[in-house]
Length: 315
Ligand SMILES: Nc1nc2c(ncn2[C@@H]2O[C@H](COP(=O)(O)OP(=O)(O)O)[C@@H](O)[C@H]2O)c(=O)[nH]1
Ligand SMILES: [Mg+2]
Image (cartoon, rainbow, N blue to C red; front, side):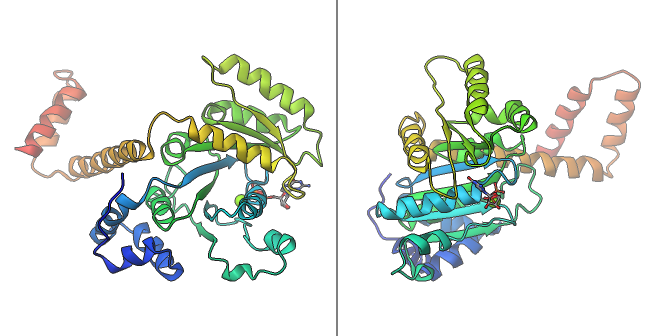
Protein backbone atom coordinates (compact mmCIF):
# COMPACT_ATOMS: atom_id res chain seq x y z
CA UNK A 1 0.00 0.00 0.00
CA UNK A 2 1.72 3.17 -1.12
CA UNK A 3 0.36 6.50 -0.05
CA UNK A 4 1.70 9.16 -2.36
CA UNK A 5 0.40 12.15 -0.46
CA UNK A 6 2.56 13.44 2.37
CA UNK A 7 1.26 13.01 5.91
CA UNK A 8 -0.42 16.19 7.02
CA UNK A 9 0.57 15.71 10.64
CA UNK A 10 3.99 17.20 11.34
CA UNK A 11 5.10 14.42 13.69
CA UNK A 12 4.17 11.81 11.08
CA UNK A 13 6.11 13.72 8.40
CA UNK A 14 9.15 13.91 10.64
CA UNK A 15 8.95 10.18 11.41
CA UNK A 16 8.63 9.31 7.73
CA UNK A 17 11.67 11.48 7.06
CA UNK A 18 13.54 9.37 9.62
CA UNK A 19 14.20 12.06 12.25
CA UNK A 20 15.37 10.37 15.42
CA UNK A 21 13.80 12.71 17.93
CA UNK A 22 10.46 12.36 16.14
CA UNK A 23 10.76 8.58 16.16
CA UNK A 24 11.33 8.63 19.94
CA UNK A 25 8.38 10.91 20.45
CA UNK A 26 6.15 8.81 18.20
CA UNK A 27 7.10 5.62 20.06
CA UNK A 28 5.99 7.19 23.33
CA UNK A 29 2.78 8.45 21.74
CA UNK A 30 1.74 5.09 20.31
CA UNK A 31 2.43 3.28 23.58
CA UNK A 32 -0.57 5.11 24.96
CA UNK A 33 -4.19 4.47 24.23
CA UNK A 34 -5.16 7.98 23.11
CA UNK A 35 -7.18 9.04 20.11
CA UNK A 36 -4.15 11.07 19.01
CA UNK A 37 -2.16 7.83 18.94
CA UNK A 38 -4.75 6.14 16.75
CA UNK A 39 -4.86 9.13 14.43
CA UNK A 40 -1.09 9.20 14.18
CA UNK A 41 -1.01 5.49 13.31
CA UNK A 42 -3.57 6.11 10.61
CA UNK A 43 -1.33 8.85 9.18
CA UNK A 44 1.68 6.57 8.84
CA UNK A 45 -0.14 3.45 7.64
CA UNK A 46 0.55 4.20 3.97
CA UNK A 47 4.27 4.32 4.70
CA UNK A 48 4.53 0.89 6.29
CA UNK A 49 4.97 -2.57 4.89
CA UNK A 50 8.54 -2.25 3.67
CA UNK A 51 10.50 -3.46 6.69
CA UNK A 52 11.24 -7.08 7.45
CA UNK A 53 10.10 -7.77 11.00
CA UNK A 54 11.92 -10.56 12.80
CA UNK A 55 10.87 -11.86 16.22
CA UNK A 56 13.31 -13.54 18.61
CA UNK A 57 11.80 -15.47 21.44
CA UNK A 58 13.05 -18.00 23.96
CA UNK A 59 13.77 -18.48 27.67
CA UNK A 60 15.49 -15.73 29.67
CA UNK A 61 19.26 -15.95 29.49
CA UNK A 62 19.46 -18.02 26.30
CA UNK A 63 21.17 -15.13 24.53
CA UNK A 64 18.47 -13.31 22.57
CA UNK A 65 19.84 -9.83 23.25
CA UNK A 66 23.37 -10.94 22.46
CA UNK A 67 22.19 -12.52 19.22
CA UNK A 68 20.45 -9.26 18.31
CA UNK A 69 23.66 -7.36 19.01
CA UNK A 70 25.50 -9.66 16.66
CA UNK A 71 22.70 -9.37 14.09
CA UNK A 72 22.84 -5.57 14.23
CA UNK A 73 26.56 -5.62 13.46
CA UNK A 74 25.99 -8.05 10.61
CA UNK A 75 23.11 -6.09 9.07
CA UNK A 76 24.92 -2.76 9.42
CA UNK A 77 27.83 -4.18 7.45
CA UNK A 78 25.33 -4.87 4.68
CA UNK A 79 24.25 -1.24 4.84
CA UNK A 80 20.84 -2.05 6.32
CA UNK A 81 19.15 0.10 8.95
CA UNK A 82 18.02 -1.78 12.03
CA UNK A 83 15.52 -1.01 14.78
CA UNK A 84 14.93 -3.13 17.86
CA UNK A 85 11.99 -3.32 20.23
CA UNK A 86 13.00 -5.35 23.26
CA UNK A 87 10.12 -6.38 25.48
CA UNK A 88 12.35 -7.26 28.35
CA UNK A 89 13.34 -4.75 31.01
CA UNK A 90 16.66 -6.54 31.52
CA UNK A 91 17.60 -6.40 27.87
CA UNK A 92 21.31 -6.10 27.24
CA UNK A 93 21.14 -4.89 23.67
CA UNK A 94 23.62 -2.09 23.17
CA UNK A 95 23.67 -1.59 19.45
CA UNK A 96 27.05 -0.13 20.12
CA UNK A 97 29.39 -2.40 22.02
CA UNK A 98 29.75 -4.99 19.34
CA UNK A 99 29.43 -2.48 16.54
CA UNK A 100 32.10 -0.42 18.26
CA UNK A 101 34.48 -3.33 18.13
CA UNK A 102 33.95 -3.94 14.48
CA UNK A 103 33.51 -0.46 13.13
CA UNK A 104 35.74 1.57 15.37
CA UNK A 105 35.71 4.71 13.29
CA UNK A 106 32.02 5.33 13.70
CA UNK A 107 30.32 6.86 16.65
CA UNK A 108 27.36 4.56 16.97
CA UNK A 109 25.57 6.60 19.51
CA UNK A 110 25.07 8.89 16.54
CA UNK A 111 24.41 6.07 14.10
CA UNK A 112 21.06 6.90 12.52
CA UNK A 113 21.03 3.40 11.15
CA UNK A 114 20.30 1.82 14.55
CA UNK A 115 17.44 2.55 16.93
CA UNK A 116 16.82 0.52 20.07
CA UNK A 117 13.84 0.77 22.34
CA UNK A 118 13.36 -1.28 25.49
CA UNK A 119 9.86 -1.62 26.82
CA UNK A 120 8.37 -3.03 29.93
CA UNK A 121 5.61 -5.50 29.18
CA UNK A 122 3.36 -3.64 31.62
CA UNK A 123 1.70 -6.78 32.79
CA UNK A 124 0.05 -7.43 29.46
CA UNK A 125 -0.78 -11.12 29.47
CA UNK A 126 0.88 -11.96 26.20
CA UNK A 127 4.24 -10.63 27.35
CA UNK A 128 4.26 -8.08 24.55
CA UNK A 129 3.08 -4.57 25.09
CA UNK A 130 -0.38 -3.97 23.81
CA UNK A 131 0.75 -1.63 21.11
CA UNK A 132 3.94 -3.24 19.96
CA UNK A 133 2.53 -3.60 16.44
CA UNK A 134 2.20 0.17 16.35
CA UNK A 135 5.80 0.60 17.45
CA UNK A 136 6.87 -1.73 14.68
CA UNK A 137 4.88 0.47 12.28
CA UNK A 138 6.70 3.59 13.51
CA UNK A 139 10.07 1.95 12.78
CA UNK A 140 8.77 0.69 9.45
CA UNK A 141 7.48 4.13 8.38
CA UNK A 142 10.76 5.69 9.50
CA UNK A 143 12.53 3.59 6.90
CA UNK A 144 14.30 0.92 8.94
CA UNK A 145 14.96 -2.09 6.74
CA UNK A 146 14.85 -4.63 9.54
CA UNK A 147 12.90 -4.46 12.80
CA UNK A 148 13.77 -7.01 15.47
CA UNK A 149 11.42 -7.77 18.34
CA UNK A 150 12.82 -9.52 21.42
CA UNK A 151 10.38 -11.31 23.72
CA UNK A 152 10.72 -13.85 26.49
CA UNK A 153 8.95 -17.03 25.44
CA UNK A 154 6.15 -17.40 27.94
CA UNK A 155 4.15 -20.03 26.12
CA UNK A 156 1.27 -17.54 25.98
CA UNK A 157 2.22 -14.94 23.44
CA UNK A 158 2.79 -17.10 20.40
CA UNK A 159 -0.19 -15.91 18.44
CA UNK A 160 0.66 -12.30 19.14
CA UNK A 161 4.23 -12.72 17.92
CA UNK A 162 2.97 -14.43 14.80
CA UNK A 163 0.70 -11.51 13.98
CA UNK A 164 3.38 -8.89 14.50
CA UNK A 165 6.37 -10.46 12.78
CA UNK A 166 7.25 -11.69 9.30
CA UNK A 167 9.59 -14.37 10.62
CA UNK A 168 10.17 -15.91 14.03
CA UNK A 169 13.42 -17.18 15.46
CA UNK A 170 13.03 -19.38 18.51
CA UNK A 171 16.19 -19.52 20.62
CA UNK A 172 17.32 -22.14 23.12
CA UNK A 173 20.63 -23.40 24.39
CA UNK A 174 22.15 -26.81 24.07
CA UNK A 175 21.89 -29.50 26.68
CA UNK A 176 19.07 -28.05 28.74
CA UNK A 177 16.50 -30.80 28.75
CA UNK A 178 13.96 -28.68 30.58
CA UNK A 179 14.30 -25.83 28.14
CA UNK A 180 13.64 -28.06 25.22
CA UNK A 181 10.64 -29.53 26.97
CA UNK A 182 9.35 -26.01 27.57
CA UNK A 183 9.90 -25.14 23.94
CA UNK A 184 7.92 -28.15 22.88
CA UNK A 185 4.90 -26.89 24.78
CA UNK A 186 3.85 -24.38 22.16
CA UNK A 187 6.77 -22.20 21.24
CA UNK A 188 8.25 -24.70 18.84
CA UNK A 189 5.13 -24.46 16.68
CA UNK A 190 5.66 -20.81 15.82
CA UNK A 191 9.34 -21.19 14.87
CA UNK A 192 10.41 -20.43 11.33
CA UNK A 193 14.00 -20.82 12.44
CA UNK A 194 15.33 -22.61 15.51
CA UNK A 195 18.58 -21.43 17.01
CA UNK A 196 20.68 -23.40 19.47
CA UNK A 197 22.83 -20.68 20.99
CA UNK A 198 25.98 -20.82 23.17
CA UNK A 199 27.36 -23.53 20.94
CA UNK A 200 30.82 -22.56 22.25
CA UNK A 201 29.84 -23.58 25.80
CA UNK A 202 27.63 -26.56 25.24
CA UNK A 203 28.03 -28.77 22.19
CA UNK A 204 24.87 -28.19 20.18
CA UNK A 205 24.93 -31.45 18.24
CA UNK A 206 22.71 -33.56 20.51
CA UNK A 207 20.21 -30.74 21.02
CA UNK A 208 20.01 -30.11 17.30
CA UNK A 209 19.32 -33.79 16.70
CA UNK A 210 16.62 -33.83 19.41
CA UNK A 211 15.00 -30.72 17.99
CA UNK A 212 15.10 -32.06 14.45
CA UNK A 213 13.37 -35.28 15.42
CA UNK A 214 10.87 -33.42 17.55
CA UNK A 215 10.14 -31.09 14.62
CA UNK A 216 9.83 -33.99 12.19
CA UNK A 217 6.96 -35.36 14.27
CA UNK A 218 5.15 -32.04 14.28
CA UNK A 219 5.71 -30.66 10.86
CA UNK A 220 2.98 -30.89 8.35
CA UNK A 221 3.42 -30.61 4.60
CA UNK A 222 6.60 -29.12 3.26
CA UNK A 223 7.32 -26.76 6.12
CA UNK A 224 10.95 -27.30 7.02
CA UNK A 225 12.31 -25.42 9.99
CA UNK A 226 16.09 -24.96 9.85
CA UNK A 227 17.94 -25.65 13.11
CA UNK A 228 21.08 -23.55 13.44
CA UNK A 229 23.89 -23.55 16.00
CA UNK A 230 25.15 -20.10 16.99
CA UNK A 231 27.73 -18.44 19.16
CA UNK A 232 26.34 -14.97 19.70
CA UNK A 233 29.60 -13.71 21.19
CA UNK A 234 31.75 -14.59 18.17
CA UNK A 235 29.00 -14.12 15.59
CA UNK A 236 29.21 -17.71 14.38
CA UNK A 237 25.98 -18.83 12.71
CA UNK A 238 24.50 -15.31 12.63
CA UNK A 239 24.67 -15.05 8.85
CA UNK A 240 22.90 -18.39 8.52
CA UNK A 241 20.29 -17.36 11.10
CA UNK A 242 19.46 -14.11 9.31
CA UNK A 243 19.40 -15.70 5.88
CA UNK A 244 16.97 -18.35 7.13
CA UNK A 245 14.77 -15.69 8.75
CA UNK A 246 14.77 -13.67 5.57
CA UNK A 247 13.79 -16.69 3.49
CA UNK A 248 10.93 -17.40 5.90
CA UNK A 249 9.78 -13.76 5.75
CA UNK A 250 9.69 -13.83 1.94
CA UNK A 251 7.69 -17.04 1.97
CA UNK A 252 4.79 -15.70 4.05
CA UNK A 253 1.45 -15.85 2.38
CA UNK A 254 -0.32 -13.14 4.40
CA UNK A 255 0.65 -9.48 4.52
CA UNK A 256 1.48 -7.76 7.77
CA UNK A 257 -1.44 -5.43 7.16
CA UNK A 258 -3.79 -8.46 7.17
CA UNK A 259 -2.21 -9.77 10.32
CA UNK A 260 -2.37 -6.36 11.96
CA UNK A 261 -6.06 -6.30 11.23
CA UNK A 262 -6.52 -9.69 12.83
CA UNK A 263 -4.57 -8.46 15.82
CA UNK A 264 -6.72 -5.33 16.19
CA UNK A 265 -9.82 -7.48 16.00
CA UNK A 266 -8.50 -9.59 18.83
CA UNK A 267 -7.72 -6.55 20.97
CA UNK A 268 -11.19 -5.24 20.27
CA UNK A 269 -12.69 -8.57 21.36
CA UNK A 270 -10.62 -8.52 24.57
CA UNK A 271 -11.59 -4.97 25.35
CA UNK A 272 -15.28 -5.59 24.64
CA UNK A 273 -15.22 -8.65 26.89
CA UNK A 274 -13.72 -6.57 29.72
CA UNK A 275 -16.38 -3.88 29.30
CA UNK A 276 -19.22 -6.39 29.37
CA UNK A 277 -17.74 -8.07 32.43
CA UNK A 278 -17.70 -4.72 34.20
CA UNK A 279 -21.34 -4.13 33.29
CA UNK A 280 -22.40 -7.58 34.56
CA UNK A 281 -20.53 -7.27 37.84
CA UNK A 282 -21.68 -3.69 38.39
CA UNK A 283 -25.31 -4.14 37.33
CA UNK A 284 -27.75 -2.67 39.81
CA UNK A 285 -30.89 -2.83 37.70
CA UNK A 286 -31.89 -6.19 39.12
CA UNK A 287 -31.73 -7.85 35.72
CA UNK A 288 -28.53 -9.70 36.53
CA UNK A 289 -29.96 -10.86 39.88
CA UNK A 290 -32.98 -12.26 38.06
CA UNK A 291 -30.82 -13.98 35.46
CA UNK A 292 -28.57 -15.46 38.18
CA UNK A 293 -31.65 -16.82 39.98
CA UNK A 294 -32.93 -18.42 36.80
CA UNK A 295 -29.56 -20.09 36.22
CA UNK A 296 -29.30 -21.24 39.84
CA UNK A 297 -32.75 -22.83 39.68
CA UNK A 298 -31.82 -24.66 36.51
CA UNK A 299 -34.46 -22.85 34.46
CA UNK A 300 -32.07 -21.40 31.90
CA UNK A 301 -28.51 -21.85 30.63
CA UNK A 302 -25.72 -19.35 31.28
CA UNK A 303 -25.29 -18.79 27.56
CA UNK A 304 -28.98 -18.01 27.15
CA UNK A 305 -28.88 -15.45 29.93
CA UNK A 306 -25.68 -13.88 28.59
CA UNK A 307 -27.39 -13.44 25.22
CA UNK A 308 -30.34 -11.79 26.99
CA UNK A 309 -28.04 -9.42 28.78
CA UNK A 310 -26.25 -8.41 25.57
CA UNK A 311 -29.64 -7.72 23.95
CA UNK A 312 -30.56 -5.59 26.92
CA UNK A 313 -27.28 -3.65 26.65
CA UNK A 314 -27.75 -2.89 22.97
CA UNK A 315 -31.43 -1.91 23.25
N1 LIG B 1 29.48 -18.23 25.89
C1 LIG B 1 28.42 -17.66 25.38
N2 LIG B 1 27.69 -16.81 26.13
C2 LIG B 1 26.63 -16.21 25.59
C3 LIG B 1 26.22 -16.47 24.25
N3 LIG B 1 25.11 -15.76 24.00
C4 LIG B 1 24.82 -15.08 25.13
N4 LIG B 1 25.73 -15.34 26.09
C5 LIG B 1 25.75 -14.80 27.46
O1 LIG B 1 24.56 -15.24 28.12
C6 LIG B 1 24.08 -14.25 29.01
C7 LIG B 1 22.62 -13.93 28.71
O2 LIG B 1 22.54 -13.35 27.43
P1 LIG B 1 21.35 -12.40 26.99
O3 LIG B 1 21.60 -12.03 25.57
O4 LIG B 1 21.16 -11.28 27.95
O5 LIG B 1 20.11 -13.39 27.09
P2 LIG B 1 18.53 -13.10 26.91
O6 LIG B 1 17.94 -13.01 28.26
O7 LIG B 1 18.00 -14.27 26.15
O8 LIG B 1 18.41 -11.81 26.13
C8 LIG B 1 25.01 -13.06 28.84
O9 LIG B 1 25.94 -13.08 29.89
C9 LIG B 1 25.67 -13.29 27.51
O10 LIG B 1 26.96 -12.73 27.43
C10 LIG B 1 27.00 -17.39 23.48
O11 LIG B 1 26.71 -17.71 22.32
N5 LIG B 1 28.07 -17.95 24.10
MG1 LIG C 1 17.34 -10.05 26.62
